[in-house]
Image 1 (cartoon, rainbow, N blue to C red):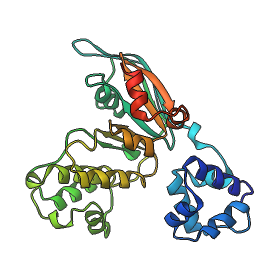
Image 2 (image 1 turned 120 degrees about the vertical axis):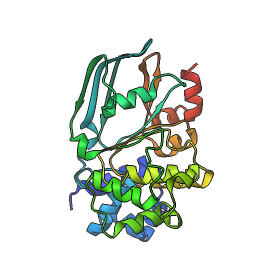
Image 3 (image 1 turned 45 degrees about the horizontal axis):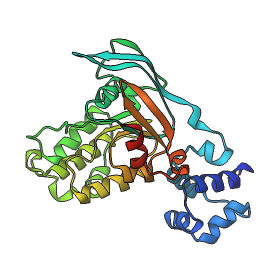
Image 4 (image 1 turned 180 degrees about the horizontal axis):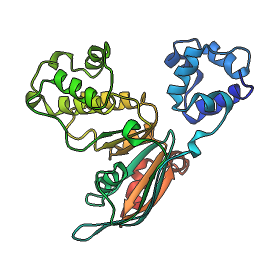
Length: 293
């Protein structure tokens, strides 16, 4: 094991604001075991290393060797201009890196959905460039604001169809997924008869059938009941790769995100780490109200 590992473990645990006891609970080990890892007196097994990487949302290289993969870009937008009847985006620049949790904020009509559609390639800008550093056909997952579901299909049929389109081999996973997303009892229900919360859970399930380098979620909790919202944020905490979310669920931004973007007047007017906002004794909601007047 690299000599850097104990230092990295302590650093990442501190950044995540987890006590040794809290981290131990997530890993199903004793607090003493975590303490020994941080002191260099013992080393975790490979399965615990993998679980640690998932908890901290970093690569194994960064966890073990201390290499910083956050600087590696996934997608770069340069000088993006998009106009419909009037300008929406104006000379916008944005870079998304590996293993980021990004909340995209802005008033209604600011152009947030337009921006993510340009990122994913569903819209072309009038000017500017979008450069990808990975194969988006294989590693870009999207949950749109609208449920992209076929209302006449049954839930299980929709999952099987989407898996075939995205070339995902479900095999024994489908029943596990239905159970995890609390849709087992609805698997033979026609989608048109699902509640709003059930449709959003199904949309989320479809968007994470395969692993991704970047997951884009546009107002994912709109239409969800409280139980579904709680489940959504609990699930998102476990997702690997980078996530870009349009949301105004400020309490969850405080907990789960590393970076906040504010889209205003057609540009990214604010781009700031969440921990920097907290260092100024502000919540995300307070910060947003201050800068989006």
